[in-house]
Each structure stands twice: as C-alpha cells, then as structure tokens.
Length: 188
Image (cartoon, rainbow, N blue to C red; front, side, top):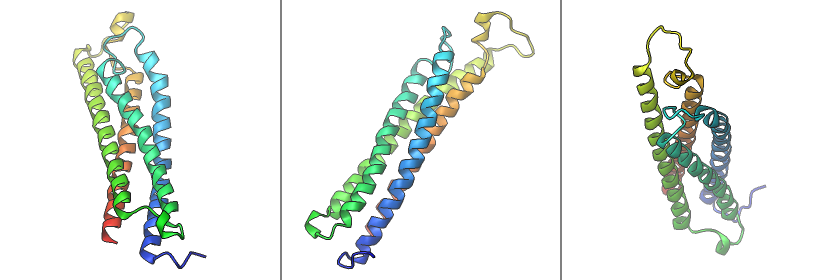
C-alpha cells in the first residue's frame, strides 16, 4: 500500500525514476558488457602487428573512452533508482529537492552525450580505417602473403564496429531516458 502522506505527483516521479532507472541500468549494462567482451576478444587479435586494423590507434582510444564513460552512465542510471527511493521517504526533510533531482538528471544527460561523442569519434576512425582498407584491396585476388592480409577487411574489423555500435546504442538509451525524465519532472 503506497504511503498517502506522499503527494501523488511525487509518487509518480519516484515511480518513473525507479522504472526508467532500472531499464536504463540493465539496457546499458548489458550493451556495455557485450561491447567489452567483443573488444576484449577482437582488439588483441586485430592488433597483432597490423598497424592498419580497425582496432588500433585513435579508433581504439576513442571507442574505449566511450565505453568507460558508458560504465559511469550505468552508475548514473542506478543513481536514479536511489533518488526514487529517497523521494518516497515519509519524512519530507530527507527527500531530495526538485532542483537537485533535475541537476542529477542533467549531469546524467551530459555524461551520456560525452560518451556518445567519444564513441562516434571512435566510429569515425574505425570506418575511416575500413574505408582505406576497402579502397586499397585488390578485387578478386587470393591473398597468400600474411602482410597483405592486414590490408583486407577481416571479420574482426567488423567485430570492432559492432562493439562500438553497441556502445553508441547504450549511450542513446541513456540520453533518451534522461531527456524523458527531465520532461516528466518539469511537467509536475
């Protein structure tokens, strides 16, 4: 039975924060773990001496930075669930202020935007590398030279693109959730 001493609008905000916080937490966590596993599998194999693989250089730096920011965004989504619990406290003095809650949501939005920027920069570098490979490879020729193998697009290169795409999708989920929650709270 919900506590009737808490205003209905506040209970709705707490409910929205809790539900979307958990949805964001799990969606971002799953996508982040999948991206991490793909990177852990693909990067060591892709960077085996080949300087022109999609998993090396700036592309790797930006993609991994975007992934690290994603894990902080997962923490932010979990934080939304904790704020929801505080909002349901029967003691009004222990509840966070509306301005403080909005500040946390804005910060979560900024974190997701920064993470998406880093991931998109990584994606640009990765696809640029893949474009260079595709333009430099001979069409219809069998490659027997191991050095020439680094000049063709390999399945591991696509794995790196997939991992980075998962990271971008997770950041998009964080952005969408933060914006929706900001709009919901602003209307109350």
